[in-house]
Image (cartoon, rainbow, N blue to C red; front, side, top):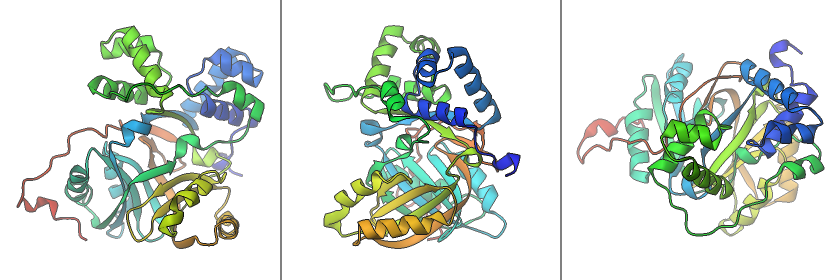
Amino acid sequence: MSEESAMLAEQDLKLADALQAAPRASWSTLGDALGLSAVTVARRWDALVERGDAWLTAYAGGEVVSRLVLAFVAVDCEPGAVLSVAAALASDVHVATVEQVAGPCDLLAHVVAPSLRELGAHVAGRVAAVPGVTRVRTTVSPRMFTEGSRWRVRAISPGQREALSAKPARRRAPLRFDAADRALILALGADARASAAALAESLGLGATTVRRRLEGLLGRGAIRVRCEIARSASPAPVTVTLWLRVPPDKLETTARSLAVVPEVRMCAALAGAENLMLVLWLPSPHDVLAVEARLAAKLPWLEITGRAVTLRTVKLMGRLLDSAGRGAGRVPLDFWATVPVPEHGDRSVHRSGE
């Protein structure tokens, strides 16, 4: 196996798994769980980040993201324009993820906006207007059943995971979300392990206020923090997307069953001819056949209507990736940024190629 595609060493996989369980735990806590010193754990993590082999990402989740609108946008491109279009889309703060795929389209983008109206304006006026785009097809996702923050490397023992996993906080009053919370999420996106004191200083807010808001948002899942591994260094380097059709009365139970399948990275409801989208992370492209067979045996009413294999991930939840899938930069996931909505009659929005 070449150096470019070498999987992480076992100790580094365990560290990544520990950070998936407790991304903001102290180095001492992580070291105790792994049988290493705090200095060793911090040094190993710094080396992983420096090489781009692993990183932490923070973004809106739970109640906060439920107030936003998510869509999956299939993009077709002119010959030779795929990577330039992908780079342009990756620079967009409303585009969380961009993948070049072998399947029903050239690129698959995850787009998030504050409202349906702004989503439509953004897809038509920005995504479809990128030079080289020939066609876009947009499918809204009304619900996310599971996503990448729940995916695990499974390198540490259940006992180690239990020791690191935080107990869920009790919900109190309805979540208040304002400009300070937005700024806090964006600041964590830049440094997911920043202390409350450091965040308070950078945001110009009181440390007590920041600590209280941070604990509340993290405890309710309104901020998701996850540890990612470069695909070339991962035990599951292959991404396969499946489009599914299930009877509407079985959607909930089917999605819940799919969400606990180890290979499932994401399961989202769709408002379209297909009503579920599944993202699998697999050791090799051949493994999709075995997974599909297991799903068919477990959920015989499930119909797979489409498949795509990711050739290259250009952006993953705000992180820009190089050709080997290593972290190479970031774009803030500012889903609340203003989306210009043209007045009625402005023909600039009719450039989607649909």
